[in-house]
Image (tube, rainbow, N blue to C red):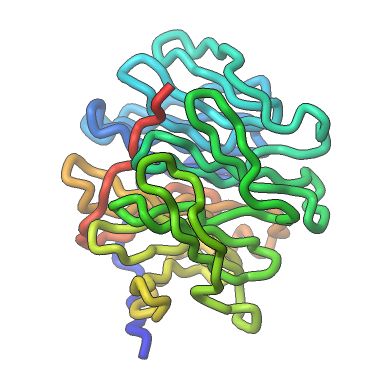
Amino acid sequence: MTDIYEFEGKTLCNTNSVLGEGPTYDPDSNTVWWFNILGKELHELNLSTAAKKVHPLPVMASVLARIDAGRQLIATEEGLFVRDVASGNLTFYAALENDRPENRSNDGRTHPSGALWIGTMSKRAENQAGAIYHVASGKVTKIFNGISIPNSICFSPDGTIGYYTDSRINRLMRVMVDPLTGLPSGEPIVLVDSMDEPGSIDGSVVDADGYLWNARWGAGVVDRYSPDGLRISRYMVPAVQPSCPAFIGVNADRLAVTTAWEGLDEDARSAQPSAGALLELGIDVKGVFDPVYVI
């Protein structure tokens, strides 16, 4: 039986993103980073000072991975770029789908080995137009093909298990992974089948105990699953389209979640002023920080 909890959190940032996505946290600077994909923006919030910055981008981008104190890897509609933190300058790093200009990046995350998994999808969300790639030291390898909306890319803390979904199919997949390389070492299996439930599986993170936290787009909740796929708790959020959670705070003991107002009419937006905001659930968690990308 799933325990259900009302929202007791707060708004961390009320800048309402059309499509807030890709949150991550830098423990060295106590900063949360996330994207407004459709608005071509990178958002930055320092939790120590509450200083907020919005960095305009020349392209749609969706995932940020820390390289070191001065550099970040970002995934965009035009491939992977290294971003200089101080200047914001972007340097091309690797191509994803040069032959597919109709596609863009979507969900992704770094593996404990230092590799990146990054998904792509059609800008018009066409069926099976995207894929998931493994990127290590600049080498790009396609690992899963024929995906419409790649999401929920995350890993067990020891790097031996990977998760992902196609949000259109709404099945959370589990696959064995080589912990040294981040490459799949087995065939994916269905861990959670929620095809017949309201909403869809969106972004996810895995905590220190191996439990998966998932933002359920269209249902206004964040769900927590045990490693064997049992949904054990559900946390309500004041936005019907949560997109991705992130562990934040110097001890990774807080949980933030991005949201979106994409596709909502005026009545729906007025009914949920938090749509598009960065929220915090207001609960204690045992999180882990996203690994750095090894360039």
